Length: 334
Image (cartoon, rainbow, N blue to C red):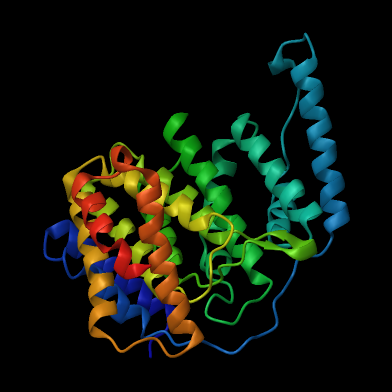
């Protein structure tokens, strides 16, 4: 048994070993061993945000002013538009709300508009990145049974994907140190998340694994990121999926396979790692005793779904060796 800080150190060490060329084929197995040292925990009280109505009114006020600025014929620089730091902190906290009017159509829509329309300063973007990538956001109650902290974790990753996009496409605002920390944290989150819920009744979308796909896709698109780091992130996503014992029923596997097969088409190194992982998954099925519990059966069907999504992508969208291997094994996994 280890603590989260120790697990983080192990993953950072693995990333460096991949960079040094000391680890490749064994990456998935080493990650699995580390993850198994973190046992599930009992459910504890989840702290939820307050002042949702007040935060929503602040968002509406800013949005109205931004719309007026856009529609006006007066030069944009003549408008004194600035989101106060205190309001930004208040609004981003609503990403943890179970209520979609504060979280989804509220804070997420607002932050998305502010980021995409360059209405936050670079200092605010850096602060927002640090806030969302913190342990308190990404790993809140993550080892516990399904709970309302899923919204905090999942929507933090979703907004991080927007920040990574902005950093890549527009003016880079993240330092190398901050960017490396984001990669480490997102990779570990992808490996640890076990809540596969998609749409949750009146609370709306959780969709963590789709959001993981979005953030990881942005990391894979970083032009200056070395291939070893991308292999490390790829390994973390696949290791987390391997451990998942809840069904993904709202297109999450499709999104993950889309992202993973896309990167695997970019260089043979990624294709080789993906193929190696799929072979290890099939070996598990051959060498292990037949599933006996609901958890074991769900893991089997999740992996089977992953194989089938690769086939659905089509031969032209998947590395040839990967597609051929999955085609051969499809009847066994059916």
